[in-house]
Length: 59
Image 1: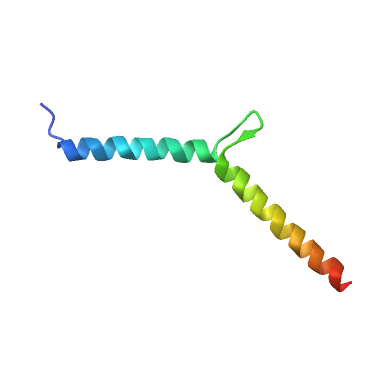
Image 2: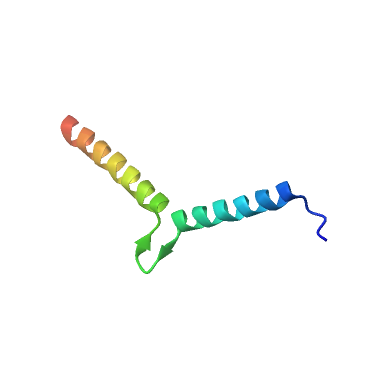
């Protein structure tokens, strides 16, 4: 008989699922990126675009 409670087992299972979700979101394999990596790339691309547009506008 296991000394771990039912709640402990449930928490461990949920933690494993969350870990897998995070790994999938941040994974990059064979040029395919997870949603978090795509989101970060889009964010930085937009930030650079806005900065470039402001610099061009003031020139």
